[in-house]
Image (cartoon, rainbow, N blue to C red; front, side):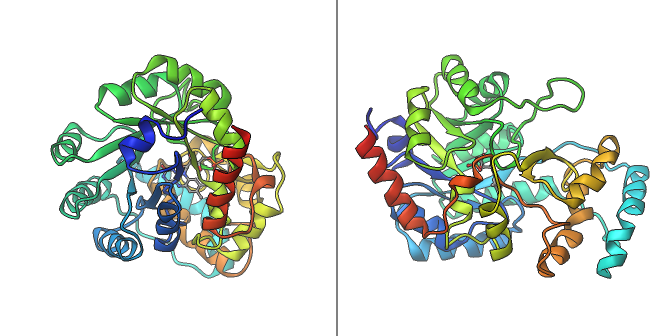
Length: 353
Ligand SMILES: Cc1cc2nc3c(=O)[nH]c(=O)nc-3n(C[C@H](O)[C@H](O)[C@H](O)COP(=O)(O)O)c2cc1C
């Protein structure tokens, strides 16, 4: 098994290890440390304004001269339905009252923000951009490609992988159902059910269906996971939860401890926090809100409606009403620096192969 392959060559990195762009939890230190250790650091820019994205890129560039990526959320085409929002606000009222919070105003400016981010990334000469939640519009793809940017798409099924390849993505992340955080899905199996296929099943089936290199994601925390992914035909692995508990991550102490105190059976996929299915540690908010599952406003509306509740709960040092995204391998999460984690994975991978 060779650690130098199409993924490392295309991305200009030494080892096929990618730190997931985790919106809300990456820091310039985390991104730069992973890149400086031979992997690919990724700025999780999904929630950033262009000003914040600009600042973050500058900070990363001060810390590394090596390749790094920026991850963006592809805008959704969901509708704002006032009756749904009104109902949800009524259900959320007890939480807001308990935390002394106002009802927020909802703002849907995803498309404009996304297009502005694309222009900024081109202006800043960012070499690698990854996407989740779908395939960007062809104008954005054409613009990025015309500027030589390498594009990475996310797929949670073979159908989504083929769609990504046909749209012109250079690489594809096959995100298994073990993965922490939001599902990158943009198709439905039935009704509102998104694909939930385990990494071990998804990766080889995607590898067989596309010609572009595949990167495995979901439950991978160490050299064993990286090697297993490569045996399945992936050319690299993207790790989220493993980097989330490192010293450089932006996750709070409370959040990191919640992951480290969890078991493999403690996470669930839920859309109660954001309107989009995401895997996180089960808690009181999920239990209480799950009964409204069919009436939850779509992302990004629900995300905005619950935002202040999640923030206030976490600020109070309380995990019961905040999202705690985590993959299914929390027992393997370590409280070490990202540089040490990278070194560990690299050394153990070399020893095992
Ligand atoms: C806290 C957290 C935030 C995440 N945010 C994003 C994101 O902004 N964009 C994205 O493409 N993936 C995001 N993901 C998913 C990762 O890209 C990846 O699929 C996942 O972390 C892999 O599973 P693992 O957590 O078991 O390693 C996030 C994951 C976590 C744990």
